[in-house]
Amino acid sequence: MKVLVAVKRVVDYNVKVRPKADGTDVDTANVKMSINPFCEIAVEEAVRLKEKGVVSEIVAVSMGPKQCQEQIRTALALGADRGIQVETDAELQPLAVAKCLKALVEKEEPQLVILGKQSIDGDNNQTGQMLAALTGMGQGTFASEVNVEEGSVKVTREVDGGLQTVELSLPAVVTTDLRLNEPRYASLPNIMKAKKKPLDTTTPDELGVDIAPRTKTLKVEPPAERQAGIKVADVAELVEKLKSEAKVI
Image (cartoon, rainbow, N blue to C red; front, side):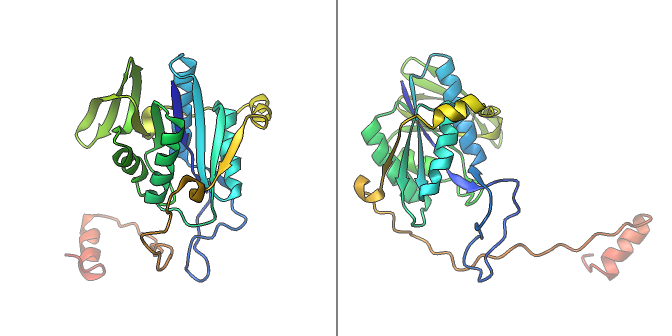
């Protein structure tokens, strides 16, 4: 069984993100970049399925500039077998990513596609659902547990009311939530081995995909700074300040 896993290059979650001086975009110059945390969970789940003997091959896919190969190599070091980069310097929005993934699904014919439920930069939570719609596959989103059986996969997903378990016929699309697993760290020997694993490069044009953006970012600005709070001695003082200063009651 082949699994296709998408990994996205994003600003590391430990970095404080700042907008550019002109407000056109987020400033990524000289900023540490990493795999999107939800994508790391997707890679880890694919590797665990392979360790169970369910999966025979893991293909890691990333889209964006040439530097995305760093994140693909990280996925290879974590246990993926080979990588594919869809190279482009253009802005990629969820629909364009889903279309590129659809083209790769048609080419690679995986039985399972695993993606992070969202990226920490755009927070769109759209690509997995769009891919499922474009390919006609069943989808199990926000997965906290994944069990592959003969010809199907059971996905326990987190919903507002608790947990819901769905059974999907393969091939299927699964998007991962935080509680699915805890990703491992890549060991030094595996990092060295990853450099020798195959990594193919293609482009949206070669895949026959139109990646023109459907929306335009007008301005990027940081959230307003919050004022420091104050301590009050008792409830009476709190009520007085809410009346006279905050004027909310």
